[in-house]
Length: 330
Image 1 (cartoon, rainbow, N blue to C red):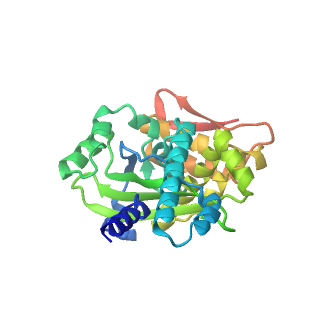
Image 2 (image 1 turned 60 degrees about the vertical axis):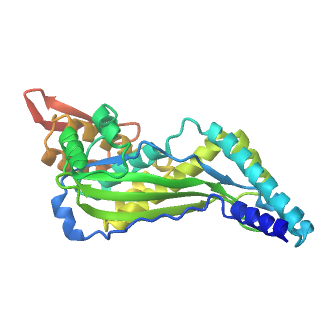
Image 3 (image 1 turned 180 degrees about the vertical axis):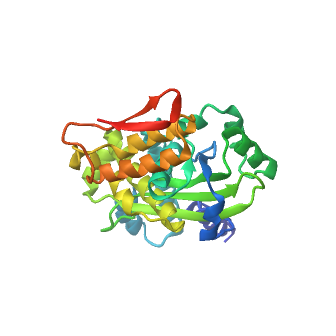
């Protein structure tokens, strides 16, 4: 009897292994907070969990059924599935070793905020130059003085922190499509006092519609395939963040995956907004010039004022003596 109880206990541990509860106090965003936001930085915590993988449910289904209700065979089946998952996790994390999901998400959020809000957002490449900021991002539970340091270092009044809770791919099995998933903890804080203006759990899934054999072949042998699926779900999460803050998302269609292919005669809005944002951050243009030129770029990207085919809009400062003046050249 004692042995059976011990086996049941071990089995329970295996079944619930990896299940973690996320205790986060959510703070709803109020639109009136926006009037206090002018310059914002988007950061992600220094640590990031490994990608989770669970794609063996189909192949383990029949053996599990055949094991019957007996505790010992079921225990060994669970152990086998757990071991297979661990091997998949190691293999697929090696495939995407050069992908930083936190950086990818911050880049997407940066461009979307530029498109959909009037916030002025610090370019992501500027953040990597600050050792002070990265040292502080190692702390998840910050004190008000930590936020003050980040604000002073980057010249911002608002800080958006991204924590990756979990991400990866799963296959529920039995007539269900595999999917990529991403779950994050997002927190908007004032730099002056460390007051939380918004905090939420945001998650998304993107179905991977293909046959099981084809899916397993692609996911293990084509690195770009897995990265593409993770990119899609990252984009979905970034879009949800924008929606939760109540901004107009009409412009984000410009960032569709095949935008450049479908609109080769127009401008690459993501690239141009990044260039424009760098000019503003380096004080080569004023905030008002940035806002005006951003709207012009969006209009051009939508095809309303675009030059013809094979022409590309370039950003440049017209006069060194007048850094507040810029022009759109083709």
